[in-house]
Length: 312
Ligand SMILES: [Ca+2]
Image (cartoon, rainbow, N blue to C red):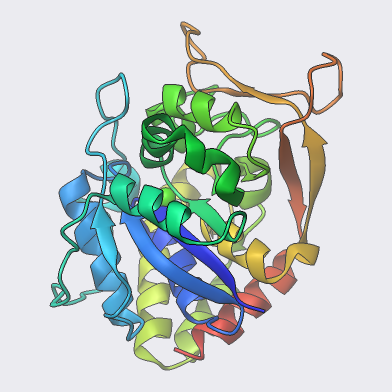
Protein backbone atom coordinates (compact mmCIF):
# COMPACT_ATOMS: atom_id res chain seq x y z
CA UNK A 1 0.00 0.00 0.00
CA UNK A 2 1.25 3.45 -0.93
CA UNK A 3 1.85 5.97 1.82
CA UNK A 4 1.19 9.65 1.01
CA UNK A 5 4.01 11.94 2.03
CA UNK A 6 5.05 15.58 1.83
CA UNK A 7 8.82 16.14 1.90
CA UNK A 8 9.81 19.43 3.56
CA UNK A 9 13.42 20.12 2.72
CA UNK A 10 16.42 22.45 2.42
CA UNK A 11 18.60 20.68 -0.21
CA UNK A 12 21.46 19.99 0.68
CA UNK A 13 23.20 16.95 -0.84
CA UNK A 14 21.79 14.57 1.76
CA UNK A 15 18.29 16.01 1.24
CA UNK A 16 18.79 15.29 -2.46
CA UNK A 17 19.56 11.64 -1.76
CA UNK A 18 16.53 11.39 0.55
CA UNK A 19 14.28 12.79 -2.20
CA UNK A 20 15.80 10.47 -4.82
CA UNK A 21 15.16 7.48 -2.56
CA UNK A 22 11.51 8.48 -2.16
CA UNK A 23 11.00 9.08 -5.88
CA UNK A 24 12.66 5.73 -6.63
CA UNK A 25 10.05 3.97 -4.47
CA UNK A 26 6.65 4.69 -6.05
CA UNK A 27 5.18 1.36 -4.96
CA UNK A 28 5.50 2.41 -1.32
CA UNK A 29 5.60 6.22 -1.38
CA UNK A 30 3.32 8.73 -3.11
CA UNK A 31 5.13 12.08 -2.94
CA UNK A 32 2.25 14.57 -2.96
CA UNK A 33 4.62 17.52 -3.09
CA UNK A 34 7.96 18.89 -2.00
CA UNK A 35 8.06 22.02 0.14
CA UNK A 36 11.29 24.00 0.38
CA UNK A 37 12.44 25.92 3.42
CA UNK A 38 15.46 28.11 4.16
CA UNK A 39 18.19 26.17 5.95
CA UNK A 40 21.41 24.78 4.52
CA UNK A 41 21.28 27.63 2.02
CA UNK A 42 18.72 30.44 1.48
CA UNK A 43 15.24 29.66 0.13
CA UNK A 44 15.97 30.83 -3.42
CA UNK A 45 18.51 28.01 -3.66
CA UNK A 46 16.65 25.30 -1.73
CA UNK A 47 13.53 25.60 -3.91
CA UNK A 48 15.70 25.55 -7.04
CA UNK A 49 17.70 22.57 -5.78
CA UNK A 50 14.50 20.65 -5.02
CA UNK A 51 13.47 21.08 -8.66
CA UNK A 52 16.94 20.11 -9.90
CA UNK A 53 16.64 16.86 -7.92
CA UNK A 54 13.14 16.09 -9.25
CA UNK A 55 14.42 16.51 -12.79
CA UNK A 56 17.44 14.34 -12.03
CA UNK A 57 14.97 11.66 -10.92
CA UNK A 58 12.99 12.10 -14.14
CA UNK A 59 10.02 13.40 -12.14
CA UNK A 60 9.32 16.99 -13.27
CA UNK A 61 5.65 16.30 -12.47
CA UNK A 62 6.23 16.49 -8.69
CA UNK A 63 4.97 19.88 -7.48
CA UNK A 64 7.60 21.96 -5.65
CA UNK A 65 6.61 24.87 -3.42
CA UNK A 66 8.68 27.60 -1.79
CA UNK A 67 8.00 28.21 1.88
CA UNK A 68 9.41 30.28 4.71
CA UNK A 69 12.59 32.23 3.99
CA UNK A 70 13.60 32.68 7.64
CA UNK A 71 13.03 31.10 11.03
CA UNK A 72 10.05 32.16 13.17
CA UNK A 73 11.97 34.47 15.51
CA UNK A 74 15.63 34.37 14.59
CA UNK A 75 18.00 35.35 11.83
CA UNK A 76 18.70 32.54 9.37
CA UNK A 77 21.83 30.47 9.94
CA UNK A 78 23.07 28.61 6.84
CA UNK A 79 25.68 25.89 6.24
CA UNK A 80 27.55 26.72 3.05
CA UNK A 81 30.69 25.53 4.84
CA UNK A 82 29.27 21.99 4.59
CA UNK A 83 27.18 22.01 1.42
CA UNK A 84 29.00 24.54 -0.77
CA UNK A 85 27.80 27.83 -2.24
CA UNK A 86 24.87 26.30 -4.14
CA UNK A 87 23.86 23.83 -1.42
CA UNK A 88 24.24 21.07 -3.99
CA UNK A 89 27.92 21.40 -4.86
CA UNK A 90 29.58 18.35 -6.36
CA UNK A 91 27.90 17.24 -9.57
CA UNK A 92 27.24 19.62 -12.46
CA UNK A 93 23.47 19.55 -12.91
CA UNK A 94 21.41 21.72 -15.28
CA UNK A 95 19.16 24.51 -14.05
CA UNK A 96 15.59 23.20 -13.72
CA UNK A 97 13.03 23.69 -16.46
CA UNK A 98 10.06 22.62 -14.34
CA UNK A 99 8.22 25.51 -12.73
CA UNK A 100 8.02 26.45 -9.08
CA UNK A 101 4.37 26.27 -7.98
CA UNK A 102 2.63 29.58 -7.31
CA UNK A 103 1.20 28.62 -3.91
CA UNK A 104 3.21 29.11 -0.72
CA UNK A 105 4.49 25.86 0.79
CA UNK A 106 2.58 26.47 4.02
CA UNK A 107 -0.65 26.92 2.07
CA UNK A 108 0.04 23.66 0.19
CA UNK A 109 0.61 21.77 3.45
CA UNK A 110 -2.61 23.14 4.95
CA UNK A 111 -4.76 22.52 1.86
CA UNK A 112 -3.39 19.01 1.39
CA UNK A 113 -4.08 18.01 4.98
CA UNK A 114 -7.61 19.44 4.74
CA UNK A 115 -8.29 17.62 1.48
CA UNK A 116 -6.82 14.19 2.14
CA UNK A 117 -8.47 11.73 4.55
CA UNK A 118 -7.54 12.32 8.18
CA UNK A 119 -4.34 10.54 9.28
CA UNK A 120 -3.42 9.56 5.74
CA UNK A 121 -0.56 12.01 5.11
CA UNK A 122 2.93 11.69 6.65
CA UNK A 123 5.14 14.77 6.85
CA UNK A 124 8.87 14.26 6.27
CA UNK A 125 10.85 17.31 7.38
CA UNK A 126 14.51 17.26 6.39
CA UNK A 127 15.40 20.82 7.40
CA UNK A 128 14.46 23.47 9.96
CA UNK A 129 10.83 23.02 11.03
CA UNK A 130 9.68 26.53 10.09
CA UNK A 131 7.17 25.53 7.37
CA UNK A 132 5.59 22.81 9.50
CA UNK A 133 5.27 25.00 12.61
CA UNK A 134 3.88 27.88 10.58
CA UNK A 135 1.22 25.60 9.09
CA UNK A 136 0.33 24.27 12.56
CA UNK A 137 -0.05 27.81 13.89
CA UNK A 138 -2.01 29.12 10.92
CA UNK A 139 -4.44 26.16 10.82
CA UNK A 140 -4.45 24.25 14.13
CA UNK A 141 -7.26 22.00 12.89
CA UNK A 142 -4.82 20.23 10.53
CA UNK A 143 -2.65 18.98 13.40
CA UNK A 144 -4.76 15.92 14.33
CA UNK A 145 -5.13 15.12 10.62
CA UNK A 146 -1.37 14.45 10.25
CA UNK A 147 -0.72 10.69 10.28
CA UNK A 148 2.79 11.12 11.64
CA UNK A 149 5.94 13.17 11.28
CA UNK A 150 9.23 11.45 10.49
CA UNK A 151 12.02 14.02 10.70
CA UNK A 152 15.76 14.41 10.67
CA UNK A 153 16.96 16.58 13.53
CA UNK A 154 18.41 16.71 17.00
CA UNK A 155 20.98 14.65 18.84
CA UNK A 156 21.50 13.23 22.28
CA UNK A 157 24.63 11.11 22.64
CA UNK A 158 26.26 12.83 19.66
CA UNK A 159 25.23 16.23 21.05
CA UNK A 160 25.76 18.99 18.46
CA UNK A 161 27.14 19.63 15.00
CA UNK A 162 26.43 23.35 14.46
CA UNK A 163 27.06 24.27 18.11
CA UNK A 164 28.55 22.03 20.82
CA UNK A 165 24.99 21.34 22.04
CA UNK A 166 22.70 21.54 19.01
CA UNK A 167 22.11 19.82 15.71
CA UNK A 168 21.72 22.18 12.72
CA UNK A 169 18.01 21.75 11.80
CA UNK A 170 16.78 22.29 15.33
CA UNK A 171 19.31 25.02 16.09
CA UNK A 172 18.23 27.11 13.08
CA UNK A 173 14.64 27.35 14.33
CA UNK A 174 14.21 26.08 17.90
CA UNK A 175 10.90 27.90 18.33
CA UNK A 176 9.49 26.01 15.34
CA UNK A 177 10.84 22.74 16.71
CA UNK A 178 9.21 23.45 20.07
CA UNK A 179 5.83 23.78 18.34
CA UNK A 180 6.27 20.54 16.38
CA UNK A 181 7.56 18.52 19.35
CA UNK A 182 4.69 19.84 21.46
CA UNK A 183 2.02 19.22 18.82
CA UNK A 184 0.93 15.76 19.95
CA UNK A 185 1.48 14.35 16.44
CA UNK A 186 3.30 10.97 16.57
CA UNK A 187 6.96 11.79 15.90
CA UNK A 188 9.80 9.63 14.69
CA UNK A 189 13.11 11.44 15.01
CA UNK A 190 16.38 10.66 13.22
CA UNK A 191 18.99 12.41 15.36
CA UNK A 192 22.74 12.54 14.75
CA UNK A 193 22.95 9.49 17.02
CA UNK A 194 21.62 7.39 14.17
CA UNK A 195 22.56 9.44 11.09
CA UNK A 196 26.23 9.41 12.09
CA UNK A 197 26.04 5.63 11.63
CA UNK A 198 24.95 6.04 8.00
CA UNK A 199 28.50 6.70 6.82
CA UNK A 200 29.35 6.68 3.13
CA UNK A 201 32.55 4.69 3.10
CA UNK A 202 34.66 4.47 -0.03
CA UNK A 203 33.13 1.10 -0.91
CA UNK A 204 29.59 2.43 -0.49
CA UNK A 205 30.35 5.46 -2.63
CA UNK A 206 31.90 3.18 -5.27
CA UNK A 207 28.63 1.23 -5.30
CA UNK A 208 26.69 4.42 -6.12
CA UNK A 209 29.12 5.30 -8.89
CA UNK A 210 29.12 1.71 -10.09
CA UNK A 211 25.42 1.95 -10.91
CA UNK A 212 26.74 3.75 -14.00
CA UNK A 213 23.58 5.84 -14.24
CA UNK A 214 23.23 9.63 -14.19
CA UNK A 215 21.67 9.40 -10.72
CA UNK A 216 24.29 7.01 -9.35
CA UNK A 217 27.19 9.16 -10.56
CA UNK A 218 25.52 12.38 -9.29
CA UNK A 219 24.99 10.86 -5.83
CA UNK A 220 28.62 9.71 -5.74
CA UNK A 221 29.76 13.22 -6.68
CA UNK A 222 27.54 14.81 -4.03
CA UNK A 223 28.88 12.58 -1.27
CA UNK A 224 32.43 13.13 -2.54
CA UNK A 225 31.88 16.84 -2.01
CA UNK A 226 30.57 16.98 1.52
CA UNK A 227 32.68 14.06 2.64
CA UNK A 228 35.69 16.38 2.67
CA UNK A 229 34.10 18.42 5.42
CA UNK A 230 33.02 15.53 7.62
CA UNK A 231 36.26 13.60 7.25
CA UNK A 232 38.22 16.63 8.38
CA UNK A 233 35.81 17.37 11.24
CA UNK A 234 35.17 13.91 12.65
CA UNK A 235 38.09 11.94 11.30
CA UNK A 236 35.53 9.38 10.12
CA UNK A 237 35.61 7.03 7.14
CA UNK A 238 33.15 9.12 5.18
CA UNK A 239 30.23 11.50 5.35
CA UNK A 240 26.98 10.69 7.14
CA UNK A 241 23.85 10.59 4.98
CA UNK A 242 21.52 12.24 7.49
CA UNK A 243 18.29 12.91 5.62
CA UNK A 244 17.94 9.60 3.70
CA UNK A 245 17.40 7.97 7.10
CA UNK A 246 13.91 9.52 7.00
CA UNK A 247 12.85 8.07 3.67
CA UNK A 248 14.63 4.78 4.37
CA UNK A 249 12.64 4.46 7.60
CA UNK A 250 9.38 4.74 5.64
CA UNK A 251 10.51 1.85 3.44
CA UNK A 252 12.30 -0.34 6.00
CA UNK A 253 11.51 0.60 9.62
CA UNK A 254 13.13 -2.66 10.70
CA UNK A 255 16.55 -1.17 9.88
CA UNK A 256 16.20 1.30 12.78
CA UNK A 257 15.88 1.01 16.53
CA UNK A 258 15.37 3.57 19.24
CA UNK A 259 13.32 4.52 22.28
CA UNK A 260 9.96 6.21 22.73
CA UNK A 261 10.95 9.04 25.05
CA UNK A 262 10.20 12.62 26.01
CA UNK A 263 12.08 15.19 23.94
CA UNK A 264 11.98 18.88 24.83
CA UNK A 265 13.55 21.68 22.81
CA UNK A 266 15.83 24.20 24.49
CA UNK A 267 14.89 27.65 23.19
CA UNK A 268 16.60 29.89 25.73
CA UNK A 269 19.94 28.35 26.70
CA UNK A 270 22.87 30.71 26.47
CA UNK A 271 25.05 27.93 25.08
CA UNK A 272 22.43 25.31 24.28
CA UNK A 273 19.67 26.89 22.14
CA UNK A 274 18.31 24.24 19.81
CA UNK A 275 19.39 21.31 21.95
CA UNK A 276 17.05 18.31 21.91
CA UNK A 277 16.78 17.35 25.57
CA UNK A 278 15.92 13.68 25.17
CA UNK A 279 14.96 11.83 28.33
CA UNK A 280 16.71 8.66 27.13
CA UNK A 281 17.06 7.28 30.66
CA UNK A 282 13.51 8.13 31.70
CA UNK A 283 14.52 10.33 34.63
CA UNK A 284 11.90 13.09 34.33
CA UNK A 285 8.52 11.40 34.31
CA UNK A 286 7.53 13.63 31.37
CA UNK A 287 5.29 11.88 28.85
CA UNK A 288 7.05 10.40 25.81
CA UNK A 289 6.39 12.39 22.64
CA UNK A 290 8.88 10.97 20.13
CA UNK A 291 10.37 7.73 18.88
CA UNK A 292 14.00 8.83 19.15
CA UNK A 293 16.19 6.60 17.02
CA UNK A 294 19.60 5.45 18.19
CA UNK A 295 20.81 2.65 15.98
CA UNK A 296 20.82 1.60 12.36
CA UNK A 297 21.65 -1.48 10.29
CA UNK A 298 24.06 0.50 8.11
CA UNK A 299 24.75 -2.32 5.63
CA UNK A 300 21.02 -2.87 5.16
CA UNK A 301 20.49 0.86 4.75
CA UNK A 302 23.11 1.20 2.00
CA UNK A 303 21.93 -1.96 0.25
CA UNK A 304 18.40 -0.51 0.12
CA UNK A 305 19.62 2.90 -1.00
CA UNK A 306 21.87 1.57 -3.77
CA UNK A 307 19.24 -0.83 -5.06
CA UNK A 308 16.54 1.87 -5.18
CA UNK A 309 18.78 4.54 -6.74
CA UNK A 310 19.50 1.98 -9.45
CA UNK A 311 15.83 2.08 -10.45
CA UNK A 312 16.00 5.76 -11.46
CA1 LIG B 1 18.35 18.85 5.19
